[in-house]
Length: 313
Image (cartoon, rainbow, N blue to C red; front, side, top):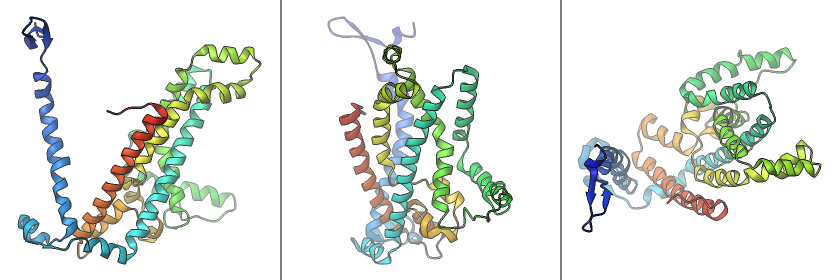
């Protein structure tokens, strides 16, 4: 009876399902997305103004229009260029390590024949993915502190204490390792699913040809995973300017601004933590990042369709 309530009929009498209830169901979500995602786009006009927040809403039409002066000021400051470089370096290392690690782990897990052990390891490596960076940052700071577990082990082995979170030399590698530790479990499951989709007859044929486990992995497993590997690789390009605000903001300090400050943290600092907030400059940086990210997203979708036949729309 419930299905009949949304049935309508064409002029010729053939029944079809009305989509009006479905659109009404989506309406609240569409309104929320419009309010919180599309309406704020209008605020990008601040990037071309000498914005004075103390004027309230009238600041949008009373502030002085300065054109591209904010961008010229950013270039002359030098800091945004350094921050952009930090963002790209950290993001590229994270993307590379985040792609390679789960592939290796998935291949190793695929070799485990005991089902209970395999599922237990999958659960363990996937657990950090459910924890927020606020919680993980507290754990990481304790473990990597001068009196933490890692440095105690280093000292016990005759080494010297390493300031992982206070050294510009060690901070970026620490970010990459902890990011991979948190996120590689999810991608591992994706690659394991790709492995289970490989036709078993391919392995049987390889065994008949005398292939050992290594050659089976090299000539059967990896080619069978190549489609999803290419897809995840090209889609990861859109994250080149997203080096991880949550992680870095909860782990970094002024001692590592030189190598650890990224676009998002820099915008946050000059907008909300500066003695004289520079909203116009922060908006200019954010708008530049958004435009570049849009180009990268479009490029990644085009590459995904070209090499993996993945189509978003």
